[in-house]
Image (cartoon, rainbow, N blue to C red):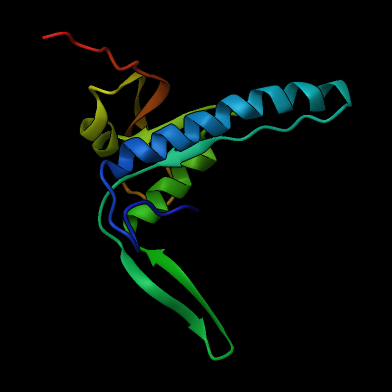
Length: 135
């Protein structure tokens, strides 16, 4: 799990998370093909959600980690579990915050473990290229 916007604040954390996932997906496509030639069937899927979480030091004496707990971390993990190899699933709320910057396919409502109702999700296709404007 990777946290964006904590502990150091950053601009556009959801977009940065999607950019990282797209970069990993693109690199994994090359590696996956090489692994298949050697008889390995490996892949990676991603789940991205945005919202509030409880953050801080978690653990016990002698073993502490920095972690996040809460519904947003659960949703991201569940979306990641539902994602097929090479797929980046983002929550409806995350999509709404970056919809002008990405191309995505609506997945409709996804049933995820631990939630009483299905959750809206989208599958990221690509990040839209920045278009330079002349003025």
